[in-house]
Image (tube, rainbow, N blue to C red):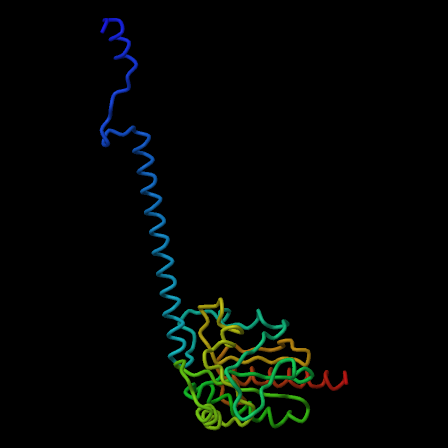
Amino acid sequence: MAPDRLASTLMTRTPERSCSQRPAASAAATTSRRSRRHVANAAVAGLCLLALASGQRVAARTQAPDAPPAHGATEAVDSPADLIGKPARAWTFTRWVDTAPLTLQGLRGKVVLVRWFSPECHYCMNTLPSLEKLRKRYASQGLVVVCVYHPKPMREVSDKEVRDGARKLGFTGPLALDQEWSTLNRWWLMNHPGRNWTSVSFLIDPQGIVRWGQGGGEYHPSDDPGHAACAARYAELERTIRELLAASSAAN
């Protein structure tokens, strides 16, 4: 080859590189991709931990009786304020016990008090006798009280277990079974993993609107200063029942 052609070829030929001799830009891109993978992996791990924690909390709720909020927890977590003034959500109970199925649509024109319970819950033990008194006192004026059994842990239960559990707590009115907590989740627990209570109560007006709620615990008449809050909640409930029944009677 002529010297001038050889010089031209050497000047224009791109040197060959091994796989390890990548340009700096390519190495930087690889580092960036690795960094993105690490961030993505860390994010996935974080989501998994959150899901695990949420699942553990839900599992604990389905196993144990209601308990007071943890130290430092705020009452806002268990407030039913987001439901007050809104239409009651549909209920789809597993079945009804010793009564024909009741529907919210079929109960239009009535004032309806619904309470979830389980026999081992001592807050329910203190509350259901008072619900029975309200049921008997105002049934003739249009109050319907429904108690809904939600088993802990979730399991198949017989009508006898539901019936005996309610009778043990002093309630003889309409009974429903929410065996898999489907309605409880729809009404109360869904999108609220921090809520502490499951034995909750709601009062529904004749138009199907939630007018009062109690996010768990107990309420009943009491002269004990240690139960002043329970007595106040009960008085508020009874006052609201009277107001709704009076308004319904006046409208008719």
